[in-house]
Length: 102
Image (cartoon, rainbow, N blue to C red; front, side, top):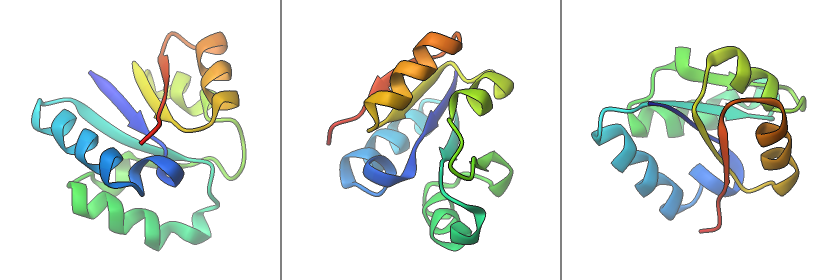
């Protein structure tokens, strides 16, 4: 399964990291999709490296809604702490947007 995570409020939490590690261990393809600008790439890539996620599976939307990237990549499930983003993902893609609360 293709699963993506937001960074802020999700993968920057212990609970988010543990969930990502479990999903990776279960042979899911895990991506990072963040609304951050790519000038903040070092912080994001450090988390990706800790999880073993290749840089090619890290996407920066530069403040744009994430659903467009999720749709383009064929993501099946996305974890995010933004209710607004979850609603847009669920309304505009086939992916299941899941609100993350650590």
